[in-house]
Image 1 (cartoon, rainbow, N blue to C red):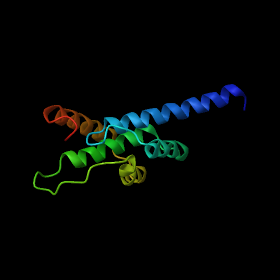
Image 2: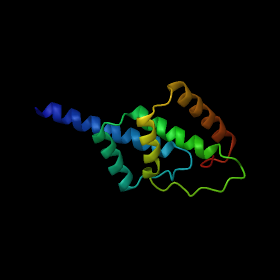
Image 3: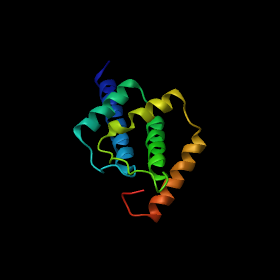
Length: 121
């Protein structure tokens, strides 16, 4: 490979990592900050070939499950790391949800978070 190809690959990887971390930070109930481990996980997901659409769907699905729990349900522990989403990522890789369903959940979360206290579903 010549220098241009190497730079292009590096740039693609960095853009991917940046986008994943933005998805993570923008997900309700996440800490809003990125730890070194989160950045390393994003790089690992890139190496595994996990698509950005799969990751976005995983963040949305996990957020919806947290946001729309019954009010009497026991409180969940806070999300402290992007590793929290690994089981949902694996679930989506095994059984991808319909894109319209993810779009529906995304709009429902957006409306719900606009109506509630910021940073909490």
